[in-house]
Structures are given as C-alpha cells and as structure tokens.
Length: 488
Image 1: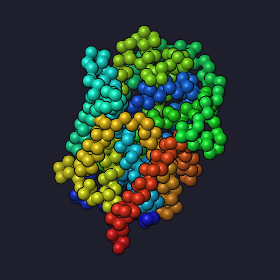
Image 2: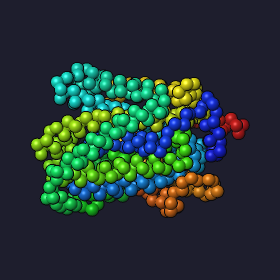
Image 3: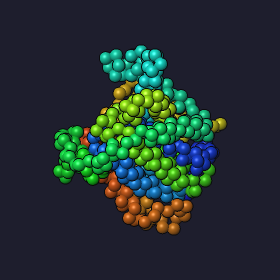
Image 4: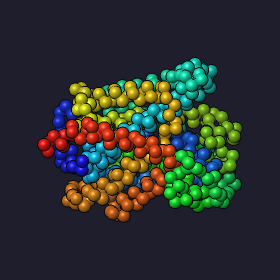
C-alpha cells in the first residue's frame, strides 16, 4: 500500500508509444491555461458578496491573503511539476513521495473535484448565456433550462451541449485546446481590463471609508451548517474588522481554484523543467492582480453596504447610469466560463489517464489516440458522464466539495515536497521550493485552516467519497497495480 514509484519509472512510462502524450505546450500556453481556469464567476460574483457581508473595501486585502495561501501551494506544485513532469498532478506527486494508497486517495479526490467543478461551471455558463439571450428577446423553453425549471423536471441542454463540444476539442488535441483557450482568455481578460479602466472614472473616495469596517460577530451556525472549526474549538468568525479580512480570505480563496490544473499538463509541455514553474506562478500572479483591481474598483464605485450580491459589477455600473457595461460583463462571464469548463475537464481526464496507466484503473483507458496522441477514451467517457450530470442535476450544494478536494490536494503536495527532500535529497530539481521545511509547513497549516472553515456537511460528504475510494482500491486497484505486478 505504501510502495512508491520512482521518478525514473514515472518518466519511462511516458515514453511507451501507445501510452505517450504529445508535447506541444509552452510556458505561454500554460500561463494562458492557468488564467483561463482561474478567472471565472469568482471575479464577477464573489467580490460583491464578500465586500457587503464580510470585509467591506478591505476585500482587496482578502484577495491578497488568499493569493498568498495559493502561492505557498504553487511553489510546492512548481517543484514537483518540474521534477516529475508526468500527467496526473498531485496524484503522480503523491505516488512518487508518499506511496500508492495515498496516491490513489488523492487521485480519487481529484476525479471528484474536477468532475463536479466542470458540471457546476457548465450550469453557470448556461445561466449567463440564457441571460444574454433574454436581453435580445430569445427565451429558452423552461423544460430545456435545467432541473430547477418546470417544477423540478427539466434538462439543461446548453450545459449538456457545452461539455460535449469541449470534449470533442480535447480529443482533437492539446494544441487546438491551447489555441481555443488563448482566444477566449484574450476576450475575457480584455473585458475585465475594460471594466477596471471604465470603473476608475466612477470611483468616489468616500466609498472607501471606512476601509476596514468595525468588527461584528457573525450569526452562530449550528449542526451541519456550522464550520468545523466552530464545533472543534468554539471559534466564532467575525464579519468586518481585521479578522473579517481572514474570514473573507477563506471565501474568496475559491475564486483562485484551478491554478493546480496547470500541473496536470506537465507531460504535454515541451520543456516542463523550465515552463511549469513559469506557467503556475505566472497565472497565479496575473489573476491576483486582476482580482485586487476589480475589488478596489467595485467598492470605490458603490458603497460596500449597497453592493449587489448576485451581480455586483454589473449592478454597480447600472447604479452609475451605464447599463452597457453590465451587458459587457455578462458577455465576459459567459465567454470566460467556457475556458474554465474546458480546463477542468482537461485536468480530470489527465488524472484518470495517469491512474489507468498505473493499473489502478482499467488499462483500457490509458491508450492514446493513434493520430492526436490524446487520452481519447477517458476524455469521451468522462465528457459524456459530466454532460449528463450538468444537464440533469442541480448540484450547487455540492460545489463546496470542489473546494475541500483542492485544499486536500494542497496538503498532500506540500507534505510530498518535505518527504521527497528527505528521501531523495540528490534528485535533480529544476525548480526548488524556497525555505524548506518552513514554506511547505506554512502551506499545510494555511490549507488546513481554510478546510476547517468549511461546513460539517461538506466534511461528511467528502469522507463518504473517500471511504468509497478506499473500498475501490482494495477491491480492484491494489491487485491490478503495475507496481504490484512488477514486484510479484
């Protein structure tokens, strides 16, 4: 259960012709992927919710704090991705440093994280597109607008179609995916920059006062809805004040989800030792700057107490008498979610592919397409399954599982850096995480703290999924593992 897979063996597996992926990505491609998956609904929605309810204008500082937490994890990811340039991200890293059982658990976790993330984003994209259609007088039939319509019975045909189209793009090849992403990300970033620049003309200094509003106690949670930290330690988070900034950081952290997906494309990168750190850290830096700028603009345009929770940027422009920008923001959100959906699907198929190549899932799924050199079998399977989930299921209540799954992956990767530094100190590392062991320890502590701020219900669901994964491992994975067969 705790056998590890050497870095050399991991790299040799990538050289088998029928299990090899085409290397076509550069540092720019990786940075674009990162920006494409990080900038989603968070920049358009979370800013208003957090400013109005938790941090006020100091939401900008909350984004900085959340960015620092992600940066700690990103530095650990960068070392692994440059040292073990193999598909699978945290799964592959855990197999190298912590052993097969831990690798299986994190792989199982990532499959859930990316699947639910893709479906939730597809449903969100569908909502923005329907809103734009309504603006021009086109209305979707209720039965085709999702399960929340037509008395709980319905099918979200737009979300279903989006996932299927993106599945086809991923099957055709990574370079095409990168080109599509580059175009969409350029549009999305252009819209964000236009909003920031236009918004600066409507900023009023008095809206920033007080920059850190006085602290007030949050309503106490109870039972399944309460944060785990509250039940464990009696800690009660505050709204506003200095501590409110850190409470807000645990919320806006979720706007950064996705930068770790970049690491899943390590095997398809031309020079991973150089380009993976650049792609991971570069995309995170760009998005942090944009998030801080947007939060400063929106809280400067309208007093934080008057901000809309559902569409803060759009409504702020409406309040200043400029509805044109509201439509532009909706367009940017719809375009932006396209890349988020595609890259989350990309990440999941690469993790699934890596687990299959190791024998922990059926080897049938590790064969690459003879022409496109992409893992077409798991891509098609997972794409169809997720399309159906997105079409038939309203899964907003499961979205927090995406968050706890990501944070769990952060913890495993940071621990992996510590273990591999001790067990293989002479391993060639193109990028080295600075200040080891202090920085990985800080990364673990920060990630665990944010996990403890999630509701008890999320922990229960996550635990149930992990327990199911352990059963699958002992029933199938342990006996079919390539490492087990080679050892026997």
